[in-house]
Length: 282
Image (cartoon, rainbow, N blue to C red; front, side, top):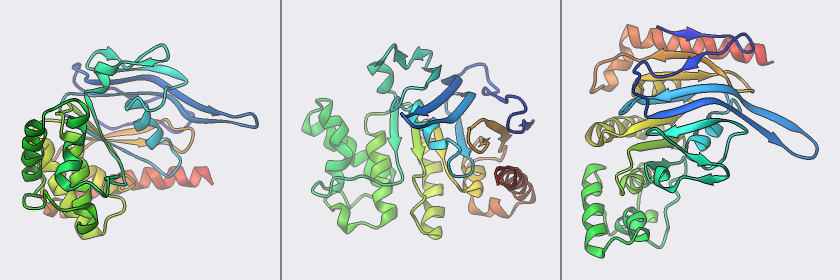
């Protein structure tokens, strides 16, 4: 069932349908304060993600999607609320739990590859930093190159790759140490439409093969519905959960799904809510 609450008129509880919660964000509030101003970015957001679930966060620019993802990643500490990963608190006072952080893999819109490293070197870098032997990290880099369809490009440099290929390297690098959770912030936002479609299909295959739990930020409602098990729509700032929409379509999904009437109805309803909120924000 879809749950909906208008901004300022209640709180939508974003707990996963299953009681087995892998990522738990409990009553998260984030306020940015300077000497001159105070901005409430997120207000009382409760959201959980079940093991192997794919959750997409959508909403208009400035609604707090990226802030929420950065909080889940431990990159910033919320003003209020708690984060638990696999039942463990992400923060202990002002200190992050290093064991919990090792469960997380991060992918951003910019691939952020080292230009002087080959594909193989970039993929293997996290393992090298963790003390893996050359044989170990090169073997793992080869396996992941196969997984993301970059076999044969291991010795290539980022400048020799297309934008989609560079993002595949970034995903492979994030997966190098077998994280149980992938946190992805607009990873395909800078790609052309055809490449983005291919990357959506490949990401679906990668997550199916690895069993990773995914929290995915996007501006594209179509992309969110295509990839996710649940789509979380945030209100305009301050970000609150506007609605939770299940995307109960069989997997694996093909691009033809986007022509399905039920798929189009889901996208249309989310767009209606988004435009309604934009109208209220003007």
